[in-house]
Each structure stands twice: as C-alpha cells, then as structure tokens.
Image 1 (cartoon, rainbow, N blue to C red):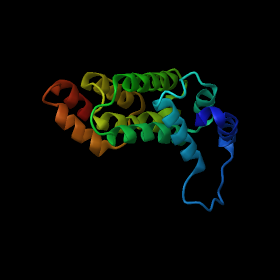
Image 2: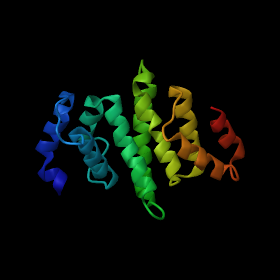
Image 3: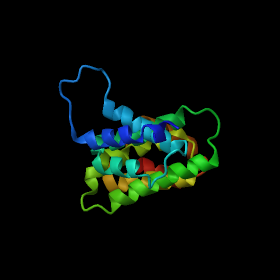
Image 4: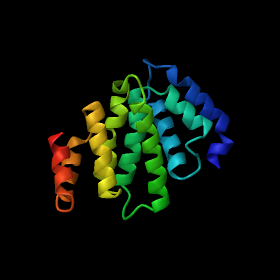
Amino acid sequence: NVLEILRPQYAAAVENLAVKRKDREQPYSPHEHLAEHLMNFYWSGKAALEDPILARFWTKADDGLRAHALDFVGRGLSNTEGTVPPDILNRLKNLWHQRFEVAKGSSQPQSYQKELASFGSWFASGKFEDNWAIEQLKQVINLVHKIDRDHLVVERLAKITATIPLQAVECLKL
C-alpha cells in the first residue's frame, strides 16, 4: 500500500526531477532511488504503465535517469534466481516496448541513447525468450549504435549461439 499512501509525495518527487543538487552531501542520488522505487512498483504490479506518476516520470527524467531505471530492472532480473513468472516478464516486455516506441518515434532518437543502451542488462539476464531478446538487442544497436554491459551481452550471445547462431553472430557483428 506504500504507493497509494505516499502517492502525493511520489508525485511531488517526480515533479522535482528538474532540480539538480550539486552540493549534495549524501553518497546516493535521491532521483535514482525514486526511479528504483517506481520500477519496483511497476515490476510488482502496484503501478500500471498508464499510472500518472510513471507517465510523468518518463517525461520529466533525463536520459541518464531513464537509463538508470531500466538498468535497475535488468540488474534485478539478473539477481533473480530461477525463472521469472510469465506475468512479470510480460509486464516488463510491455514497458520495454513502450519505451522503445517512444524513442523510435522521436525526432531525436539519440536523446534516448543511454535509456535504450540499458537493454544490455535485460538481455544479459537471460530471463527472456532468446528470440525476443535478441530481436530487441538488434533493434537497439541499429537505432542508437550502443549497448551497455557489453561484456555481459557478449557472454550471453556466446551461450545462445548453439540455438540461434546466425542472429547471435549478427548482433556480435553490430
């Protein structure tokens, strides 16, 4: 119930994303923690894609913070033991598709470079079906010419060459 109880505070925090603190004393970023909270709410089904707080977050956050949010999800997937329930994977795919379509439809897709490059952690997690994951990877690299956690991506590509060698080699070439 935390989201519903603290909804006004989360909404205010999202509105304050434009405020940059250079004299920050804490070793962590409140904005990054906000992004992580919002991703946890989404992952767990407490917030929908259409939730006004999430929608506003994606509008207000800069490319680096959006990238942090998506990378947080990918790292969470990597740290999840065993399989991830299909409903959660589908929810995450919906998030990814929405973010990718926003970037692709932008007149400046390079302003989404960090955000899209964070898909590397999603791919490296190995939690998604290989064909879906490699297709997304290929689209990201073709659009923004970059992928994060490239060493982990290469390791994952090496693992899937046994099942989809052509696509794996194509992505490695890209």
